[in-house]
Amino acid sequence: MASLELEEILKPLIANPHVLGVLVANKEGSVIKTTLDAVITKLYADKLTKYLEMTQKMIQEIDEPDAPQKNELTFLRIRSKKHEIMISPDVTEHKYMLMVLQNPERKTESGKDRI
Amino acid sequence: ELDKQKKVQLAKDLNDKERDKIIHSVEFTKFIDYSTKVALRALNETYDIITNYSESADLD
Image (tube, chains in turn yellow, orange):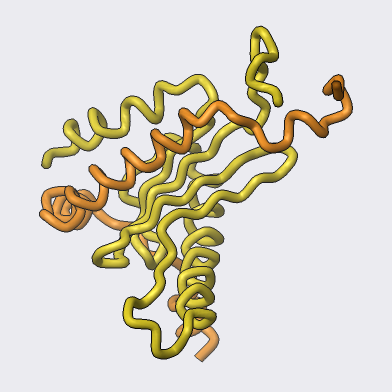
């Protein structure tokens, strides 16, 4: 895969009107691809890789010790007033993470999504 | 020793060669294909768990 291809794969995420930014990093927090500015990228990459690692460990630690199949974190969503942070971790190699930052306010035109 | 600790804490900036190597790897390609699909699906979920309880929401 070339850089351009990576761009193509991420395009539907980046083009979504609710999405404020997309960040791909390795588990050490080194940035592979970002659409956010340099300062915010660094901050998010640093904080989120640590947070992700903690959560992955927590999920494994609260798992039954002799469960036939080990449990594992598959997706992480954090909702705050200003943002929603979605983290899609690398479930096979545990080397990378994809972070999508989105605006949590979804105005529905008709309100029919409300229950 | 303090410098050593600092180095551990700060993530290294990848150069173009290192980044290209990652992007070209099979494991990264698999990861990005899968994780993008999952994130897209999460993004397209229209149900908002918070909306009903926000101040402006009319509760009926």
